[in-house]
Image (tube, rainbow, N blue to C red; front, side, top):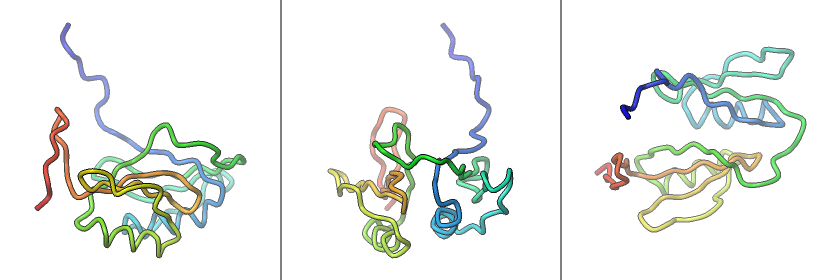
Amino acid sequence: MMNKRIVLETASVVLDVGDIEQEAQFWGIMLGETPGPLRGDGGWLTVGSLDSTTALILQKVPESKVVKNRCHMCFIVPDVDEAVSQIVELGGSQASGPRQGGGVTMADPEGNEFCIGSFRRTKDGERIPLY
């Protein structure tokens, strides 16, 4: 059976949050973006571009995070230790790590997990260092 492409590109990643202003400030600094205005009666906000096609959108929800995220974002950073320090200064926290190979799981101020590392992976899972 031939694999047929269904998805053209990633349009957005939506992150559920309670304090949309605090999270917009955190993620705006993380991505080097100025968040857009609140819309939908204050329930939505686009932070900015994750890459050339993908936007990070925050969605205000009434419930708080209770368990581990089933889906999370992973980011490539030039220096993991420096990124950990900067993320903690922004109000984030280190959730675990460093793991074998140097990846670290971080969390935003509301506990939403994301990973950072100084490597890329091939389709087969081979780790390719940045430097």
